[in-house]
Length: 338
Image 1 (cartoon, one colour):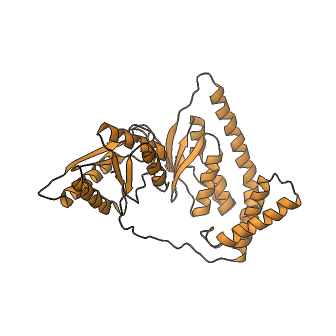
Image 2 (cartoon, rainbow, N blue to C red):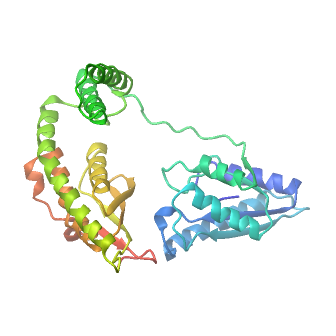
Image 3 (cartoon, rainbow, N blue to C red):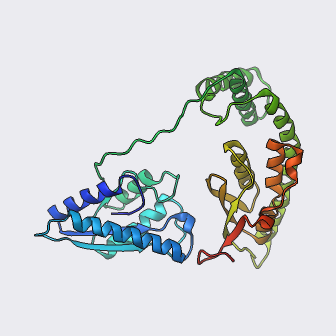
């Protein structure tokens, strides 16, 4: 059984114990290391994972029949690999199963080792295709819903309509034909009507939206310049005979607040070759950087200041960069700051 923190972990353990007691009398709890803890697991992550496995083992002992005890095994896997996608998780679980003669895998329906990344279903499919009997534990899920629908308005509708229409025309190559215009209007209207109450986390106001759009137009050439510059740097590295890459995971706490500003920065980082935003939680970003120059540019805070300019105005440019604030770090293979 793959183990990870979830609201239904305790119930899943109880179900797995009952199934094991009715079958082989042996159960293995395996904890893959999440992809954002890339590389050799640091002491803190290892300790947390070991504590979770110990807790699961205690639960299993509590649920087992005292007259017919189970053989409970725990293991932590993937500590020296880059586990990113569902196939990676399926592979290390399959390797463990092969090594221990296991042919049945019970999974927690809320199991999500990749944080917000939905990998459970494709992982189950990959394991099933590899010949394992995969079963989701039939346990009750705790429903946790935030407020999905928010107050709508004409401005929200018009903004989403405009963005959708421009994106449609971009895909059509701005041909300007009657067909593209009509279908673009129809598509944008449908998108705006369905999503204008859930797309924006905050209610838009005309007096702030218009200046932000103007500043966005000013920011776009700067972002384009950064993309071109990074393209050249990455192209040089690729063409260099020595291939001088130095991939690292970096952590950045940005000086931005709200979903739209953080999303704008995360997308700007991803659009810039050499850096890729792989996780965002609140103001914290986890970014994969390919070369030192890309990493230095990220820590210099140029893109962050640009996004601050778009959303907060010119005065927001006067801020220390992430390096000066101590809001960034490079995570080495041991999970510690370099």
